[in-house]
Amino acid sequence: MEKAIRKEKNTQPENQTVYSILFIIGICHLLNDSLQAVIPAMFPILEKSLGLTFTQLGLITFTLNMVSSVMQPVIGMYTDKKPMPYALPIGLSCSMIGMLGLALAPNFWMILVSVLFIGFGSAIFHPEGSRVAYLAAGNRRGLAQSIYQVGGNSGQALAPIITALVLVPLGQFGAIWFTLIAGLAVFFLSYIAKWYAVQIKEFTRSKASRKSNKTSKNMSKAIKGALIVLVFIVFARSWYAAAISNFYAFYAIDSYGITIAKSQIYIFTFLAMGAVGTFLGGPLADRFGKRNIILFSLVGTAPLALLLPYVGPISAIVLLAVIGIILMSSFSVTVVYAQELIPGKIGTMSGLIVGLAFGMGAIGSVALGSLIDLLGLTPTMIAISLLPLLGFLTYMLPTDEKVSQWYA
Image (cartoon, rainbow, N blue to C red; front, side, top):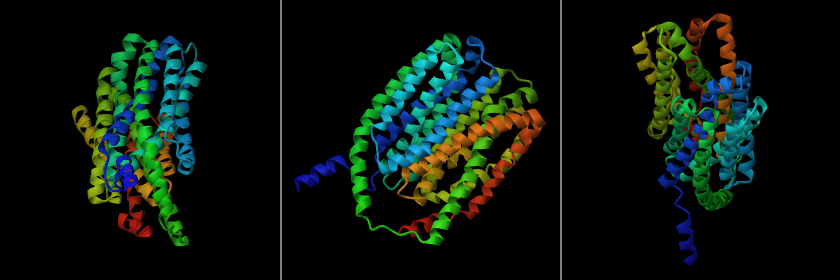
């Protein structure tokens, strides 16, 4: 009896949602992704202080996104087999070293090494953070993943504010203040790691005690097919988001004759409303089903995206706000859907879907930039408005009920 009481103190019932852990890991996600947001926000500063070319700036972005995206599923696969709770504070310690290097870097190569540290820290954080959200979710996995992911989206939306308040007045050395943000994240994650270490033992024990379900060939093919469809959905969402985030400011300047400063309003609106959509998507998926929200996020965006290149400056801000909410409502939902497709691979699926979003965004930025050079800004913005139509592929995904039946 005494042993059972001790166990109850350390672990929560399987269907109970631990909101305190979810909010702390969400805050840590915000801190982690705000560190990543510092890098593109520093580009105007680095271009002046170190005389970097646009090619070098592009290589910095590519290095950051590719390291964090490629390593995420690899780390997720490893920690699915051997969970490492204290990898979370270790990962943010890597990012802290990277931020210190970024503030003091005397040349391009030192910048690149610093970005590698930040990218590696992010690659460790994302799949492990998603596993913490899964363990704390109880029976509200959509909501849990939304709380976790909205922190990241909010951190990314801080880039314009970081530029205006910190980097413009303080220059490159101003990045040193973000080592304090990384240190704060390490402190929070050390607390999370203690809770995680207890929960993962119980999770591993309960998973081992369950009767293993052998996957039939037909079911295995259906899972692979669903993952391929998810890849196309993430591709459509990531490339469209990359086009708006990286190039819509130039389109607004050309089309509406506004200043660089005013053009940032369009980007901030899209990113901030995207964070709102990320938060709303999870609880809506718990209520209406994950497949339905994935379908709505792209198909609902399609007519608005097609309209966007033809509206005026005020209407564009309104449309970008609505597009941000609808499009990003599936960000956390696709992660949960993938985790439930392959329940034993929580870290792998999180790393694959979130890492894929980062990687697709990086490749999309390069490809869309080349397309703009080739075709021009306006034709490219019109062309990318067709991407959300790929959302109709969602009809090829198995329903939530069918996925549940596979593992019943």
